[in-house]
Structure formats: structure tokens, C-alpha cells
Amino acid sequence: MKTIKALLIDSRNGTIKEIILNQVDGCFLTDMYKSLDCRFVEVIRNSIDGSNNDIWIDDEGATEEAKSFFMPTHQDYTDAQYWIAGNGLIAGHDLETGETTDHTLAKEDIEKLCDSMKIMNSNSIPKIDD
Image 1 (cartoon, one colour):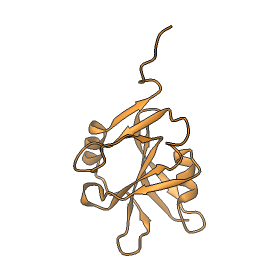
Image 2 (spheres, one colour; image 1 turned 90 degrees about the vertical axis):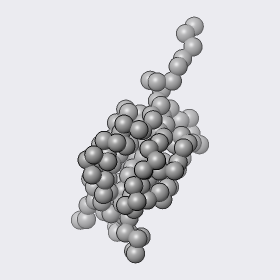
Image 3 (cartoon, helix red, strand yellow; image 1 turned 120 degrees about the horizontal axis):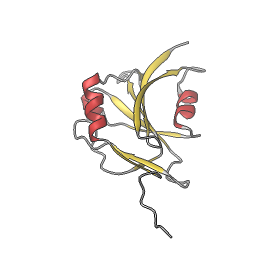
């Protein structure tokens, strides 16, 4: 069974951690669904840091009652300047085959991404005190 390394952006808990995705029936979608806690995913092709890393997101996140969001804001990683509902995964891709591959971010790049990432969840959303 083939595996790849990906980064899980857990907006519910405000963390980013490296995880292993397993290939099932020739693709990684089953593990992506499980990791993102969703039924459908969408890829944002950003070539994060110029190294062909993509952000995979919960495609249903914005249609349901979203309780957590993230925004990758560092200019080296994305041009996206909008909130993304739910969790995300960062994985690489092969330009020639389109195959999903290991992420290629070095530890210092991950730290830079963590420092610049904005996360909003139900714990950080102001509530009206009755």
C-alpha cells in the first residue's frame, strides 16, 4: 500500500500537523475524507512556495453550519486571502502525472506557515453574553 505525507490544518483545534495518507483503490480520497471529516473535497492548486504543494479542502464546509475556518495568509504560500470553512490538507502533486504526492515543505516553511495562518473557530468567535 502506497502512503504519502500531508499536513492537516485542523481549524477546529487550531493546529497543523503532519499525517500519513494511505492509498486505497489507487487514490488517497478515502483517507482525505476521513482526515478532513467530510464527504467531498476540492483542491486549490496554489503551488505553495513554488514547489507544487496544494491545499485540499472540505467542499461541503461552506454549505453546512461551519464552526471553524482558516486562512493561509503568507504570500510565499498562497494568493488566497479568504476564509476557508472546515479543515484542510496540504499535499504535493506531480506536474507530469497529476498524481498526489508527499508535501515538500521543510520544517522552517511549516513554521512560517503556522505563524502566518489565521484560524477562527467556535472557541474564538465572540458570543453575546445574555
